[in-house]
Amino acid sequence: MWGALILGVLFRGALTQISDENLGWNFVNEYNNKVGSLWNENVKKSWNYYTNLTDYNLEVMTNSTLQMAEFDKEAAKNASTFAHDGFGNATLKRLFKKIVNIGFAATNDSEQLKAISNLEADLTGIYSKGKVCLESKGCLQLEPGLTDIITNSRSYEELLAVWKGWRDASGKLMRTKYTDFVKAMNAAIKFSGFNDTGEYWRSWYETPTFEQDVRTLFEELEPLYVELHAYVRKRLKEKYGKDMFPETGHIPAHLFGNMWAQQWSNIYDLLVPFPGASSVDITAKMKEQNYNVTHMYRVAEDFFMSIGMEKMTDAFWQNSMLVKPTDRDVVCHASAWDFYDENDFRIKQCTSVTEDQLLTVHHEMGHIVYFQNYRHQPRLFRGGANPGFHEGMADIVSLSFQTPEHMKVIGLLDEVPQDSDSDINFLLKMALDKVAFLPFGYLIDQWRWSVFRGDTNSSNYNQHWWDLRCRFQGISSPVKRTEEDFDPGAKYHIPGNTPYIRYFVSFVVQFQWHEALCREAGNTRPLHR
Ligand code: BJ2
Ligand code: ZN
Image (cartoon, rainbow, N blue to C red; front, side):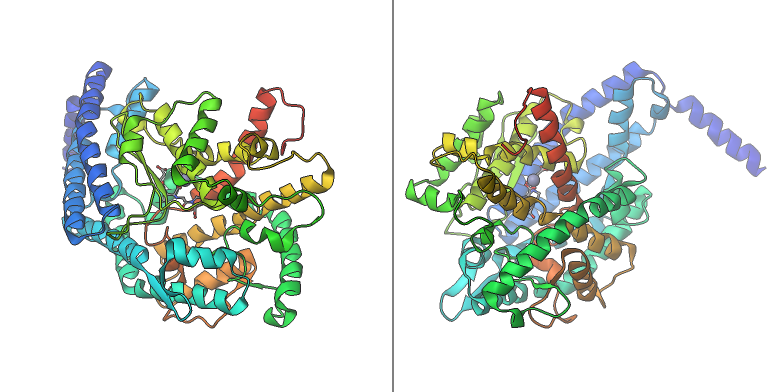
């Protein structure tokens, strides 16, 4: 009896499923037109919240996200009436796959979705409003105040006060909310057939061996990192005194010129291998030449245009937020936005006049240029080949931008040095950003995947975080940490819920692409030139 019933259902299913690919195209075209205004509205409402953190803007954004989820669900249901797995046209088949894979929206509990949206916004709000009050300097936010101190101070104690203060003012306040957040995401993603949120995120790379692939890459690169780490440790011991360093060989986490010890080029002055040879202080040069924020974006735009890319649109200049507003709270962490209307692209950045920020301007504009180049694709294809690809694209141009030759062209360097000592100086500076980053880029999602899997929970969140920081980066916390603290939350992408392995992938592929582009261009000179 059951057999007959199942057969009947299958038979009916087969009869009612549509296999006509022309009808399939009609369906995806209609979908594409409908999501245009829906996505545009939703991004606008998110933008309004991120550039003005009010309860009202939060509510409007959440409502719009819920509305979009309803639409996704309906579309996925309708798409399932097509026998799309059997479609011969690969493009059409892929479009359908994207319509039916709706992530968290598949849940049958809209309260879960609401919780996910609200918690992400709440956590991002806590991060963005965080303030540290210092006796000597008053109360400061992460950008620009705390970042300035971490970048420029060479006082062990002052750096420590800022390092600890930021963690008290951000991560520490997030613990309970983050636990609820993980729970809500994991519950919702089960409806899409994934065991946990980490498995969902990894699926975007479309290879079953992704975890092993990144592990292998990391292990291949680790010896280079270890050498850099040893060199930096020796120099920092000379600077701060070896008593400040643990016997275990780790380096205290607050001494790298960066709040998270993720990129180290801000302490290049302490590490320069050949002080007599050429090395540049770009920030000083920028200040000397009265660079302003608009100028920084024009310099970046010029470079992209010089390699045949389009200029930024008028809407970009009209709508972007390039300077930190003084009258309201905003999310300062830099980002690039596509509004899905082929014209409105924006950057949100609390830009200050420093070398770091100039590189971030290039990074964010790199995203925009990618948006512009795929703007004529169906909306469902307006994304990176995978998230690591988007990040690689965002960085590829700044690799060339940073070469001494180009620095001279834009007047930030007086002479292009030709000697090998200057080359080593330049390469070390690059390594401080690009090699130093590798274990950091690798470990953030090692932590998150473990949390999503349930191997790490709120009773050992911080312990596991420091186990990874210690194992992969070889750094240690300068003061005692406990489970009262929640140090992962002090890094934007944890409250902001942006997956992070994309940056590890990017920091590998961008060099492969750089090499390939040089080869295509018939270059015969050393790649770093
Ligand atoms: C500064 C940069 C991100 C980025 C922002 C915030 C999160 C996602 C976007 C996306 C882009 C897209 C950043 C740069 C290198 C290391 C990392 C860090 N901000 N995002 N909308 N970086 O990637 O641009 O703009 O894919 O559409 O976070 O840790 O600083
Ligand atoms: Zn990016």
